Image (tube, rainbow, N blue to C red; front, side, top):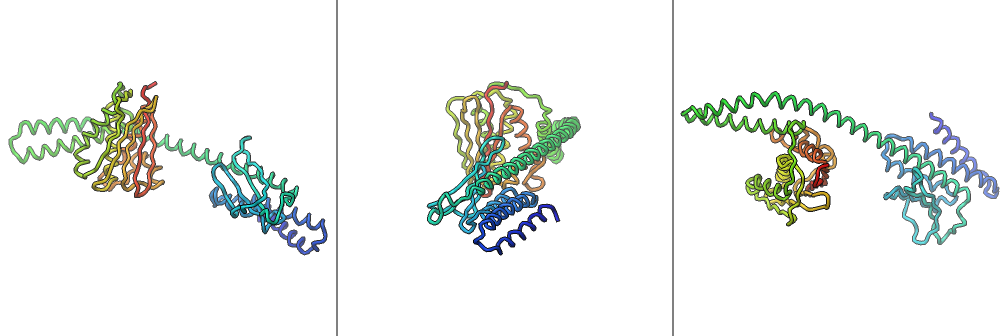
Length: 386
């Protein structure tokens, strides 16, 4: 049994004992209230040490425990505010009196604790002076708990970021090596296949050679994606109209959109938005995002493509109203080789490539998605590279 558990047990025994003392004894009443307060502090310390529960579950348990420490515990209601979130033991009475303490983390108020009584039965004077001090102590303890949780959360995010960075670095080196190793034999395959096509007059041989060429071209596109991912392809920045890039890309994928009877709408600023970018790479970004929207959309679905001027930045939005993604999936979509498609339908590199290209352009990419409602990709690109 831990020290906190032993202490809590002793305090509970003392509280039970003090309940047996006649009520007329004022000193006994005071002792009883102090023991209730100590019991509350012990219980809250015990609650905050429970690592099996989430932050919200812990605060919920605390907000229901606090009222029991007040003199009129049957009427007391506790509310805890932490930033924009409220936790309540019950709804406050319409007519009420309350006492409160601000919760401060790093000298900044980030919330409050309030104890309510119904004004129909109680007045402000019914709050004991010791209860004000207890509320102050609870606010300090909660602030320390919140600060500890936030530090722990930041550390976990930092470690995840480091692991992600290391994983990307290793994968980048591997994919760069694979791409270089594949490029030479693919060039030979394409060259010799073309010679067969040029020299052969046999229709069967020509058909087979054409299949080899198509397969080799597909393999070369895969290699190109690997090289995009590993940042092996040199960038060529120039000022280009972002609307023109989007229009040209839509023309490339138009047959696929039409075959699925997709209703695509384009909202493009009338004035050209000149952005310093690598045309080939941004075309790859737009193509991949529209292609993903196409795959996620039902037949005769809708896709919205928008380009707008945002001062020093340009914004590209691609939205579909298809199957959408869960929160868990959204957190993984930029991971290399992560895919939700059937085996053989995709390598899981498309969005990794998109993410890498956007970052190399000093831009940002944002995703919002909801299952069965659709997905929105928003890309912000600086107009000028620094």
